[in-house]
Amino acid sequence: MKKQMATNTVGDGLAWLMLALGVTFHPHEYLGGLFFAFGCAMLTRHWFPEKTNSEVWFTLLTAFLVSTFGSTVFFWWFEGSHLPVQTVMAVLGLFSRVILAVLMEIQRMIEVRKSEIAGKLIDRRIDGDKP
Image (cartoon, rainbow, N blue to C red; front, side):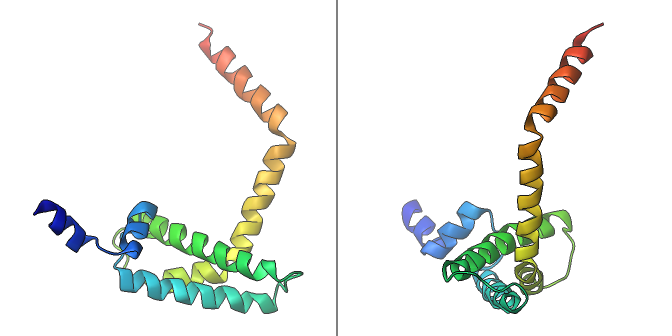
């Protein structure tokens, strides 16, 4: 009986995916927002043209990840917001390439200075332990 209730409550793969990603929106809101994000991400192809055909798939993957996690964080941070989920996901999809480029640049800067950063963290920790 309990197994059937659980299956009826969360019966399809989309619901399991949303649960695994931590998405708390209704499935129709999430899918609508995802398609808006894909459409807006494809609009950016005119501003940042691809060099290869595989970049189209990378653009869609980036839009999926940025819009899914970004909208979840947005509605967690602004809990009482009355913005539609689709609007937030569309804007995040539109700027997904820029957001990813900024994150990759930050990662590159950390990679270049990793020894210096680690040294400073260790020095602070060792100096902080002294009475």
